[in-house]
Every structure is written in C-alpha cells, then in structure tokens.
Amino acid sequence: MPNELIRNTDDILNMLDALMREPVLFWDKFYSDRSKKVPFFINHPDENLVSYLDSGHVQVGKVLEVGCGPGRNAIYLAQKGFTVDAVDISEEAIRWAQDRVNEHNVDVNFQCISLFELQAVEEYDFVYDSGCLHHIWPHRRIEYIEMLNKALKPGGYFGLSCFAPGFAEIGGALDTTDWEVYRERNMKGGQAYSEEQLKILFQDYFDCVEYRVMTECSESEEKFGVPFLGTSLWRKK
Ligand SMILES: C[S@@+](CC[C@H](N)C(=O)[O-])C[C@H]1O[C@@H](n2cnc3c(N)ncnc32)[C@H](O)[C@@H]1O
Image 1: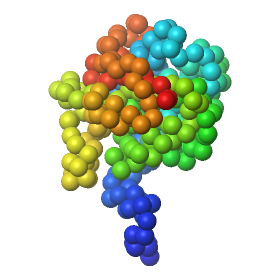
Image 2 (image 1 turned 60 degrees about the vertical axis):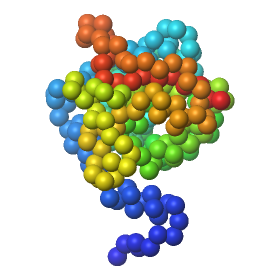
Image 3 (image 1 turned 180 degrees about the vertical axis):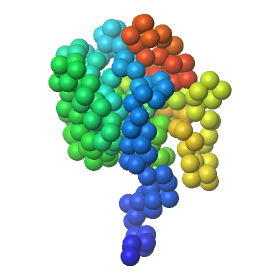
Image 4 (image 1 turned 90 degrees about the vertical axis):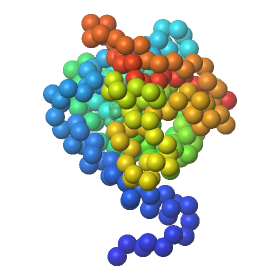
C-alpha cells in the first residue's frame, strides 16, 4: 500500500507527478513509429543551434543535451568536435539515436535516464535543450533550473528551444498558465513560454544573450526551423 502521507516537499512533488501523465510510456509510444510525420523526426540540427556555433558564442567543448530524443542535435555537436553527453527518458528515443550515431560514425555518450537523475557539477561548457522544458511539469521546473545551473561551468552557456505563445493555429502550443495545467491535469501537447516568462524564471542564474523566434527552414537547408518555437541563449552568471 503506497504511503500517501505528505511529510516534506519531495512528497508534494511526487504526489503531483503521480497525478499527471507518466512520461516514459508516453514517449516510448511516441517514438515507436519512426515514419510518423513529426517535424523534429528529421535528422537536422536546430537552426538556432547552428547560429550559436557560427557566431562564436558557443565554442567547442563539453556539452550536455537534455531530452535529446533521436539525437539530431547531439550528433551535429559531435560532428563539430564537441564531447557530447546526451540523455533522454525514452529507451525508444535512445535506441533510435544510437542507430543514427552508428550511421554517422561519430561518438556521443547517450544515456537513457531522466534529467532529474543527473549529478554533474560544473562539468559542462554548454547545455542544450530542444523541446524538453516545455514538456516538464511546472512543479519540476525549479529542479530543472537548479540542475542546469549545477551542471554548467561558471560562464557556461545554455541554449533552449521551446514553444512560444501565440502560434497554436500553426502547430504550436495552446497558451496556458501553470495553474491551468493542474486544473486540467494536462499540458495539452506542451507549454508555451514567452520571452518575459523565461527571463523571470532564469533571472537568478542566467543572463539572456539572445531571444528570438525560430527561423523557418526548408529541408534542403539541412537545418530544422519551425516558426512556432522560441529560441534563446543564456549565460550562467
Ligand atoms: C519534443 S521531444 C524533443 C526531442 C529532441 N530534443 C529533438 O528536438 O529532436 C522531447 C523529449 O524530451 C524527453 N524528456 C521528457 N522528459 C524528460 C526527462 N525528465 N528527462 C529526460 N528526457 C525527457 C522526451 O522523452 C522527448 O524525447
């Protein structure tokens, strides 16, 4: 019989987890059909990630990708010479990422674990998240930000792509509030974050280097770009 007595903050967080969708089963099912028409199933890196390297803001070093999915950004970073650790909670995603790595003959350390299990301390020059934060329940966001801050070296960079508000009609997320997520017990496909909200959430740990909407890209450009994501680059204080 589960112990349902709330004694501390962890008990509250665990109770909230239990009220919401179980993520591992969801994502394993999501990736079980690789031929599905999902925009980010193409094997090209985010256009903003490419721009961070091209502009020289992010330089070759040790990188962690959280919620790496089938590995497109991790593989790009490895091809550019980074030492890459990449984690995802879905075994299906990691299996697919490993298949892609084998085809590309690059080295990426993929691990099937939750980002909340990471224990890295000031280990990384760069942490990247494309589309993971907007699937993290709001009650786990503080822990997510603390993990980022702990994992990055002082002055390290954090790159993020996540749903921007106002684009539901063209495939983005419905605008919602944190409280609404719990009233509905549902994030309806992901949570949108405005530039202002991100700046409030990260203000204690990170300075904003850049925020912009992602630039739409065609497949021939060999970059991933859809107009309903916000992209941002942050520097650890
Ligand atoms: C929208 S997908 C993006 C995948 C990949 N970053 C891409 O853009 O191709 C979000 C990913 O976050 C992963 N994820 C969700 N919660 C996670 C957690 N707590 N720890 C690690 N990965 C997580 C999911 O399994 C999923 O692969």
